[in-house]
Length: 321
Image (cartoon, rainbow, N blue to C red):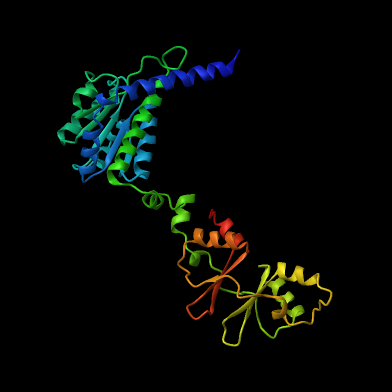
């Protein structure tokens, strides 16, 4: 049996239904749906049973993460107490392919009693769900991808795509930007990139620091204990003088006159790269580290006195990219 051909046929079948819906997009009233949701003072409550409910939960999650306050309620739970979670300023998005799901239909009179506006997704506007709705989205398909043409496949794909389309329309209406998205995803890579600052990752304690007069062999001990691959050299005023990196040390070892008794400053990097803004985004600090091909970025105050250091490993471990 050629399973690749079967899988291809499934994808083509579902893609055809999406394309059919796209070609008839003028029959969908996205503008009214967007205006209704944006003008609402409440939340967008998504509900549905079975596969429609599972798709509805995903739609609610997508809406919530893209700026539309939304959550999913199972209609059965709504009839047993959760109806109180729906406020008078809320809007309901109800999903049922048949438009006749019993659990959902039982909920409709109670929504109407509270004058809750409803957007529905079903295959027929003449269905019970369609008749109760203020705005209707046709999710009918000519063929399910299931070989028996029974299991919800093409229809659930179209429903989910309609939810995505609505979410994107709302994003455009609200001028939803990357910064807004990141604020809803502070633990994600974008959130970290836009919100984690240098000060959040800065090492300030037990730093490997020596004076300008320190001899090299003592500086190496400090470097080993510090476990940063660097030693920071300060002058008598506590300002940054230079930095000795493990690279500086390896290069010095190649010199014929190398001595462990030399002054550490003699082989260190003068005027090392540093910043005086601990509120700089960590992602920007990473770019500086990469551009200058260094491992350690020194952070100072406005008087060039040491505040802390940021190591490239700290950025990597924090997921900064």
